[in-house]
Amino acid sequence: MTRPATTSGTTSGTTAGSATADREHAPTAPVGPGELHERDEPDEQIAGRATGGIGAGAGFGWLLVVTGAVGLLAAATLLVEKILLLQDPTYVPSCSLNAVISCGSIMNTAQAEVFGFPNPIMGVAGFAVVLTVGAALLAGARFRRWFWWGLQLGVTFGIVFVHWLVVQSLYRINALCPYCMVVWVVTITLFVAVTAGNVRRGVLPGGRAAREVADFAPTIAVGWVLVVAALVVTRFWDYFSTLLPG
Image (cartoon, rainbow, N blue to C red; front, side, top):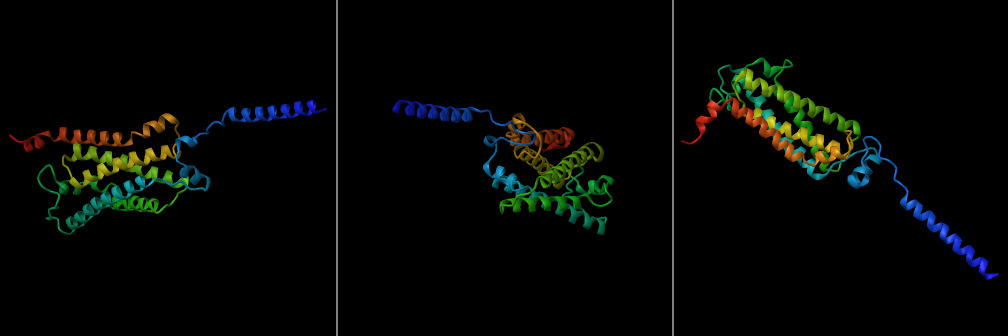
């Protein structure tokens, strides 16, 4: 009478073990569009989406704070110089050094007021937002997906507008503005960083390949800036060549 009981117990244990093994080897559910697999995303980002908000690391927060502050300072300086020039048409801006490095030449063009008011006003407003977002992230803030999309649209507009200004400066106005070039560098850095971050956080669609490309964000930003710098040097080589020793 004891043997049947033993056989039954063994069978039950074997069945339970098989069920456990089946569960362990069962295929995981596919990752849906815009979602990141847990092993590809920090735990706080997964938890953030579950609670309706998406955060970012301290490094990204500091990047926004620094670039926002530098951009804000450059834009505010340009705005002050523009106001002084409006008050006194004979005023020579501090960044007007010669025929090539000449903010004044740019400030007096239609391109400097594309929307009917001085372009630096947009810079002051935009970089102030970037600085504020960075500070909020450092304080532990999380934002909903629509907010990250708004930030993405903002930096995308910025990068398009800046490159239009680059073309105008190099090939139409034929002058350079040092403060403007600072804004160019900051905007390129912001666009690459925000886009890469949104890809990693699953805000922007993209698979593993897109996330791997996002890992090269610093290299992409540096390369981009170097290309613009090469265009500047090439366009004004007659001037820059005079600065070379010998």
